[in-house]
Length: 446
Image 1 (cartoon, helix red, strand yellow):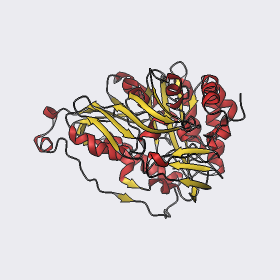
Image 2 (spheres, one colour; image 1 turned 180 degrees about the vertical axis):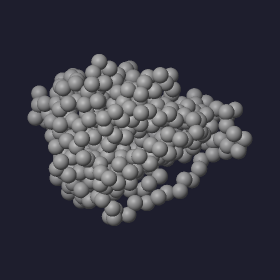
Image 3 (cartoon, one colour; image 1 turned 30 degrees about the horizontal axis):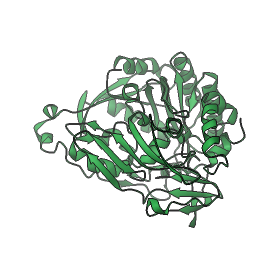
Image 4 (cartoon, rainbow, N blue to C red; image 1 turned 180 degrees about the horizontal axis):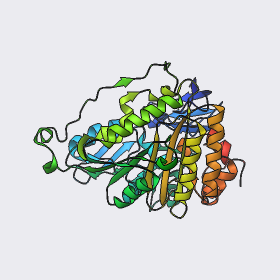
């Protein structure tokens, strides 16, 4: 065990001193009797994988491939395997992740624990919908198999449970069959929020859809954006030059952000960036064939992109609002952001399908908006205000991005918490598995 200072990806809350355990294999997994939380690649933005003054157990060495049925597309892995490692094995064999977030630098265990979603939630649900089973190491050291048929209560509580039920050691998932490593992308520009929503609704049949929103546009242009639709390209659709490399992995040029980013993100600079990005994308060809990493993981090509926001880090606000109230609620949220003076060049809107089954899973049917804001006290005040609006419109905040949700908001947003808590109390009555997030939101309620 060593002591390290750890934070989330957003660098807010700031780094905290933590005892770090890094087992080389599953035989070395031992819980020491103090509070502990599993941690994968550390890509949760806030404090979900932080455990100040206690312990984290890193899964990075638990990254073995255990079995792969290439005919059926079923693969079993240790929980520390990253999506980057997984994709390097499955894509050349004609398979793809059933659901992926906006970064490939997450682990299998982290993806299950956060029940991550992607650009296809409206069509194919969240990651947990494609998990067949997993082995869970409980607080009493017992190793149990969890699936929809076996220990189903733990299965539903641990998917989206952010490591608070135990440590996932290995899991089996079903993959998606593909013919090529390319995405057929269609690009549309919208002039305001209503047009953005109209494009997403009209293209609800698309497998993947996402809208980049100009967060600084206002008045009649409020909510203007670029809608990106995607489908896995068929071999016959590709230009001849791409057919020769249809399932070949590509090495993309990596750009690095300096440890101390030399520029300050001001409203003017972000406004210029947003205007240029909108203009370029607006005039882009209607249809292009992009390597899958360009479509799903554009920020991964910029190593350490979180440093752009400076030493104080940033806040990400991500909410989902239900179908009955999203138009009014999101218009109000975007209006507040636009008028605030905060500089945001990363604002993303997606459509969600039916609610995920995990007791504490984030997605439900509606629209989700995610916004990055450089940290200062004004941004913190703004996010707290947006959190209240989300609560007023019966929405929900995402644990993986949250840093300042209030316990009273949490209870309203996650009505299945009481059911989850009964399972937590049954399998972890001493609350061995605990994090900064759980102590902030859960351990003082119910």
